[in-house]
Amino acid sequence: MTKKRLLSVLTALVFALIAEGQVPAASVILGRKEVPILCYHQVRDWKPTDSKVSKDYIMPPANLRAELQMLADSGYHSILPDQLYAYLTKGTALPSKPIMLTFDDTDEDQYTVAFPELKKHGFKGVFFIMTISLGKLPHYMTREQVKELYQAGNVIGSHTWDHHNVKKYQGNDWVIQIDKPTKQLEAITGAPIRYFAYPFGLWNRQAIPELKKRGFVAAFQLADKMDPQDPLYTIRRIIVAGGWSLKTFHAAIVRDFH
Image 1 (tube, rainbow, N blue to C red):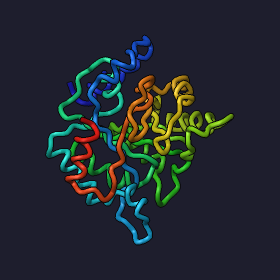
Image 2 (cartoon, rainbow, N blue to C red; image 1 turned 45 degrees about the vertical axis):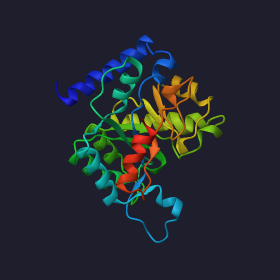
Image 3 (cartoon, one colour; image 1 turned 30 degrees about the vertical axis):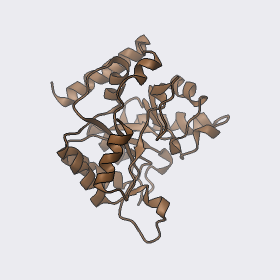
């Protein structure tokens, strides 16, 4: 079975499970070994004006190339959210040394720099799109670039309209921040948008039923442990800091997802 066909079957399985309501108890999901999930933002060289904190969110292209090369040389296989969902809910087998590569905030360098590097190693990524930025050149991706990422087998997820903190949503915020962006992304990809990343990694319990009723089947935060009640909506990622050495990078994956 080809990779494309396998992913198609897994996607069908995920939606079948959702339709049948066959999501296991939280304890079952929490009992699965965690899959390393990495989070990247900007992919560019540092500038003299970048602050120390900013550099944690800015990955120099040479560093990204070295990290992806190391993952490939070490036998890691990139997986996508449908595969992770099937694994967490049904125990569906994953490839050896699975890892998920995610990119937040719509920066164009994710398309111009990261995308070619992913392709070089046969990796796929998950791109969480903040729709306010779409088409705002020279720093953000266009709709056509997002569509190309999707058509190349990557996953497009929602990251709100303008990165507004979910914990502060009131009134019409769910329509502005989630409903409209989701429709926009679905129009671009021609496919349902089923995965969400919380801005700043911040979530609250009130957000989860709102995401569920809008058709999201999982949501990604950052470094905190998965919630014991709703692990599928608090899946953990780590930000890969721009200044890490390869030794630190590898140690973080092993340490944080043991």
